[in-house]
Length: 307
Image (cartoon, helix red, strand yellow):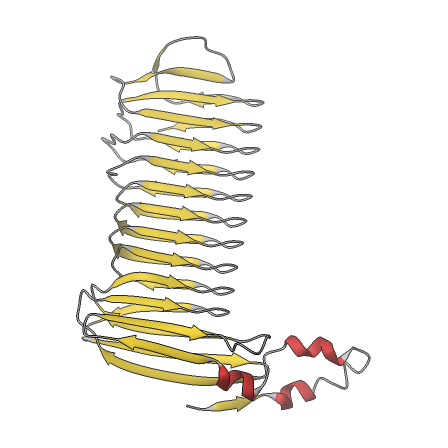
């Protein structure tokens, strides 16, 4: 382990900041200390991480060992060293937890870079004010942070991802997915399972492979762009406010379509057998031979159904 004092860098700026209240510098991170742990872990085991104020990166490798590297940081050397990293481990599970000092409050936390054997289940990974990134992992995986991006690529199994004030980026997920964020976009490609995504004040872009389960997308003040694969048989619901919806369908599709907007228009590249009352703000009918329901609704935004 090593502790690094970076007071000289702060001191160099004191002349320039002489007119500022010294307390303004109290939030600056002044000390950090690296840590490293390594334990045996079977492929197919489980990983749990509970951190705060720092990012968590999890990647896979071809060794039956979990390798935990990271840095804890604080406003003083004492604060930094009082921030404990607790690791519980067995042959088939590893649990990593950052323990807050009970008698201190301040700007401290920890970042992690963790390598685990392929097939290890990301049972639960939580942090705050930092990103969570995972590549080539396995589920059921539960990832949760705040004020930090969630990025997951090539995961096999179910995924639940949650953050606030940041984006969620997903690629090649083989299993059902549930995403929750606010003030950040959702971008998903190669989803192969039921897909449920909610955000606010931002957009959702989703390109789905054959899906086994319903698709539900919901945003407020953000657009929705959805691409469905050929022969899709899942029900789809997309809802937003104050923005538009664009749905990309294959050249041949069988579906029942209901689309409505309050103050804009609806356009489609497909011939439809209409039913009920049709207007520029609402259409209902069948594409091809009919099939699963596609329900699209917005206010103050255009709806486009495109080939």
